[in-house]
Image (cartoon, rainbow, N blue to C red; front, side):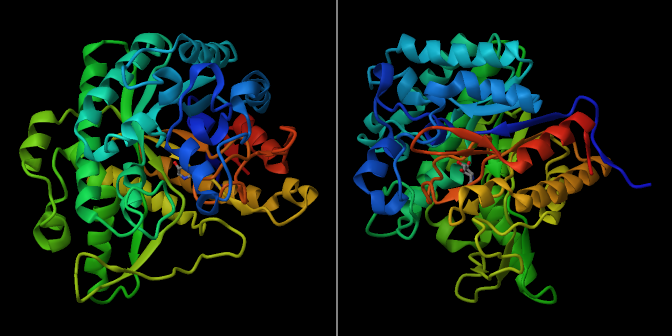
Length: 450
Ligand code: NOJ
């Protein structure tokens, strides 16, 4: 018999982020972050706005009841920086604290373990206005925000992440062809992107250090997107390109955070990176490095690359075999297994949580068709089989967070792609369970994939 089961204490859950689900962007003293600002100012980019989205701010009680009904063991969410600290003076907004206290208490009353991200891309406008991630002043603001979060929630929250997918909020905004809030709208600026990333790493280290010094009894890490990269032609130079590419994407964050230095082969062989490193970067990392307790891994899709003669370390992306009409990302379940083995082998078997994995489908069908989401069930079954296999093969994985509970605001696609277990009518706020909702519930009950 072959059984795809899970350890008894395995944490099954779902994930979200504040500006993607909360709405109520001006309620109770909250000020604007870059998404609130630019989704309204540049609707053509985001195809929607951060209001109303699924409205977690108003609906959190019923949403948590829905999580409980589904049997979730854990829920990942992020704290809205501008709800908690609305202005550059750093003063705390009691209403912001009250909201997250209510959320955390209700989760715990329902036996759902909170996993909290301090920062999931919602940079306050007051920090954007002074240069955002390329102004080192952000470090003190970040650490102050983290301290406020630890002081107010650290007695009950035991799983923390400093930040979600730094490549997206550091590199993407400086690449003109990407649709994130545009820091360099008229050109690309790799140097600024690298500096932003470096400053983000310093924020991460200081926050981990602070958390450890407070002895709150929980664990802290960061959430990184790990894309398994395969060579287009496995017989030649594309293999080298695939190694570089993986180092440049996930290794750029995981190496410093876990091993205490940037990927050496990129600094050696990739001129574009080497020549644009901030002054004193190696000393900075050496001085500030603190190991983290856990790693959050977001896995959605694989990459396939070809060697590029002009810049060997900047490989060319090649379309892979798994693209499917109507899906936001190309699903490749075996990539999850590969990613977990990579984490185990390269990073010395850290404690891992799959903090995101999910299927976004295009909003072109009628509601009935969207609710009968057999495609999402297939997606879950295949990915969770791979996860079970990886655990049996020795990967140290403690939890899995499906993205997401409810259809919500998707960064570059607005409301045109839906990831949720619950269908959301964005006009009325009404939620309707999809077929996959029941599938995941049964899977959690059985602690086993069918
Ligand atoms: C990763 C991001 O963390 C999240 O914000 C986003 O919605 C999902 N990917 C899906 O694209």
